[in-house]
Length: 423
Image (cartoon, rainbow, N blue to C red; front, top):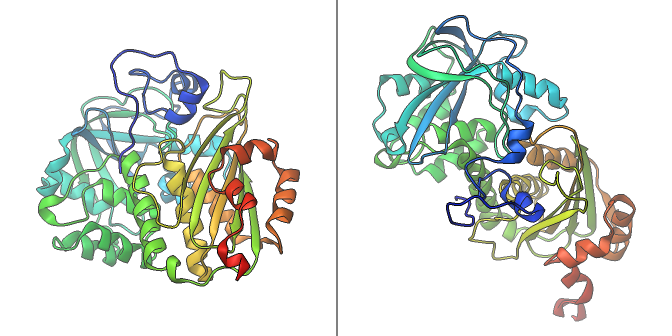
């Protein structure tokens, strides 16, 4: 599922609303002034001495999106191995870490870039096969990267979709220096060139392969029917995993669960992202509403809060959630995971307030992990929706009347009574 946006070649001076919707997707020109402002201009402290890097890959890989279908496939490895190397590229485990620590992880990871056509994943050469094999590893694996030159001396660059990226250089040779301890389930579906990618995703998720590792092996063209395999840009693969898995769980299981018996409210916050999840005892429905306070990463130039929202009713949605983008699907999978575990069906209305954290966006993972954290906690329970709304009014900094105006679901529920209420 790819994001869409305004067409046309010229630069457009963006309004706050455009910036909040775009989130760095370059709708207004070849560069994003917000991402440029946050880009770390200081040199990375640890740079490669020469053109060779022997290290342990987390394992990690990045696939670019500029120039699609001609992209870069980029394995990653740290210059200095400090602490848990796996952690440096595992967003599933980052919740609660300070932003500076995450940025430091990423500034230390070097990307070796190989230009590829996305369709070449169906017939990988030796170098690509070696990269793919590292991604099946259950722990960091020793690698040798021979680069075209010293990596670009820069700090981290940022995106609302994926984790920050550090130094990079062209990759001439890539090899493993040890035999990896391979995850057998991933190996099975990598070798099975008849299995559809969706079937593989579901089976691997149920085998406890995390969404972070899933999006990497999808990006590297390791899943699906052999002749149809493609490299998938990282920003798209993250959303594809969140979207496809949550859609499957909703349509195949959650639709058939009994409804919740009470109104529930969950909450958590991280890096100036405040989430409140309202679950209602109704059939499946979902809405994500976001408000960017003045000074928030995508609302730097405005003195007023900027709202965005997307929703789906019981039948789901088939178009991309352009307003809230990847965050929509990252939050949806976290909500779906909770309902799967509880074996209940509900309408979920999610309120997200984004404040001025002083740091740029670190990727859509923070939405998923913050909501996962919220839904691990004991919820507040209410006998009535109005009581839950009154509670939320004490927590949200933006008055509830503004949320109701933006919502496609909440205001409708508050104003209308279902036929079933009279039975």
